[in-house]
Length: 327
Ligand SMILES: C[S@@+](CC[C@H](N)C(=O)[O-])C[C@H]1O[C@@H](n2cnc3c(N)ncnc32)[C@H](O)[C@@H]1O
Image 1 (cartoon, protein in one colour):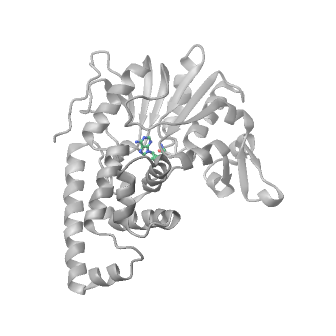
Image 2 (cartoon, helix red, strand yellow):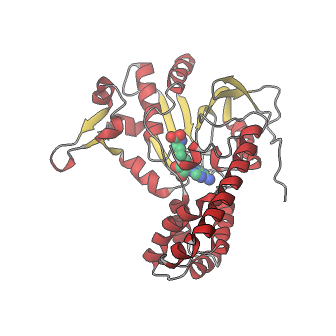
């Protein structure tokens, strides 16, 4: 589990969110005191390859918030330094001030993409939060016509391929009447996902029967790797999509939307806005799957809880965010 996830960042639940913020503030103040006492602050600054001040960090936080909605906690300064120091080396820029100036001056879409890719957290696994998949199978079994699924933060592909496997099993064929559109903001993870090649230990928790049915084992130079079967790949279309953008290059209606473990990086008003944009993209009996620490209630009245982290449209809801961002 990533730091953000284990810490329960922006769970969407008031109490948890407030408790989390208070905990982060306490930890931060403790860390600062500790560093000052031991004189470690100056020591660690002096051994850094690039100067990275709190002001630089604040600029990064503002930029990634505006670009991707990602609300980086104060405690992430070291993580941000190490991820972006790589960008400075790659671009040959020798100071954070200049690197950020160049980004802000606009015009370098490629670097904006690399900057964003560097700051996302992509942790995922096959059949993560396993209780969702039997619910998906049961729902798909009741539908008529092609099953349309949107996996809205697909990371390196394990989630959309788990959806594809579930649908194959539900319909008893490698070519079920189903299509999955899998999107993410991060172009690097989308490339990995579209390749569909993984180290074999990614399948450790999968039954060997399932693994054999849906993956091909690499031989020779590919030993230790597995590839998803071409039939699964055909079921999934990968596309870049920023959930924060005003226009999404997709069109519904969807029977199912997976939006798991991404909302935790957004603040509540952003979560509410995204949820109210999901609602009109769903079929009336559609299902929305959330991550284990995400609570979508009280953010919009468009959805009601159907079961553990599974939502359905509330016919009485108005699909409007209930919160707006305060300036
Ligand atoms: C922790 S992973 C979750 C992956 C998968 N949904 C799961 O639960 O295993 C979060 C993903 O959200 C993506 N992400 C972050 N901000 C995003 C945004 N604004 N729009 C779309 N995807 C975003 C990240 O690139 C990352 O791949």
